[in-house]
Amino acid sequence: MPLTVARKDELTAKIEAGERLTRQDGEDLYATDDLAWLGRLAHGVRTAKNGDVVFFNVNRHLNLTNVCTASCAYCSFQRKPGAKDAYTMRVEEAVRLASEMAPLGITELHIVNGLHPTLPWKYYPRVLRELKAALPQVALKAFTATEIHWFEEISGLTADAILDELIDAGLESLTGGGAEIFDWDVRKQIVDHKTHWEDWSRIHRLAHRKGLRTPATMLYGHIEEPRHRVDHVLRLRELQDETGGFQVFIPLRFHNDNNRLSHLPMAQPADVLKTFAVSRLMLDNFPHVKVFWVMHGLSTAQLALNYGADDMDGSVVEYKITHDADGFGTPDKLTRDDLLDLIRDAGFQPVERNTRYEVLGEYEGPVPQAKRRAEPQSVLS
Ligand code: SF4
Picture (tube, rainbow, N blue to C red):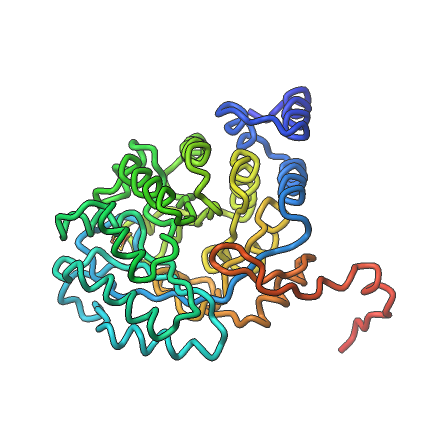
């Protein structure tokens, strides 16, 4: 049911006063059709936290193997051993691929993989050590909590010992994946691996205690309902109250190509923008909300910057998980200049950051609308 004017006024007053929103507030925000109102509120919060800038980093995604023991219903990436397009990189190959990017000034490698059934655990710290030796200036953001849990299983070690060894090998941050939707009724239908809220939160809590800063994601737009999205961000908000170790929240739109959920329609832009806005409003203790343009398309990603997002990932040169799933013409890479143009075109000032959100460079902001209009515009080319 659409929200009454009185309820909207109540929520507006609460948000403008900086009061924490409840589960019911979150569900009510999802119930509104007034996207302009929701966007104004989320943009106000985003601007108060981060001004008129949009952060970005220049990174490369690297998937060491697509071989996976699990078969998650939404996954377009995993292959079974022996499949003709299954692959696993040798350490040298990973280093060679990453090194090819060095001249482009990457500051981060983002590494996620399938849960390979036979690769020994020692392979993973070895890859990190070799990458760090070859690219000492590049931060290694690697492995989901699901992979850390998998390493526990294949090594017999605790997550504590695993993280210590990975940090010693050069790990700077975990990645935020494996979160999907934490609610069990949804999760049990789409997730095939063994890492659920209890282990996901245990591993991020441990990483935060060791001084790592991590992202958190949410895969939305499949079989879940808005109340599950609210529940998901409330769990993260509570964990963030405890540890303070999350840097950024990243909503990821489910893609319906080449997986077992291909019969589902994908979230439309209005739902995307609503999800960004409500997430920004609920997660009052998260410094940043990131829009991953690969998952949303460039135009919707630009709009999301006005609905709570303040960070745009990234200068991705290769991202196999999503690129395999994309039938909408979204490019598989953007250069730094492409990204600067995209951010300015959306009306924001680009700021380059590193993995820890330290500022590496500030760029000129957009040409103001008024100045653009002062020039006569040609309507015929
Ligand atoms: S989402 Fe991850 S764990 Fe699940 S099937 Fe795909 S690669 Fe494997």
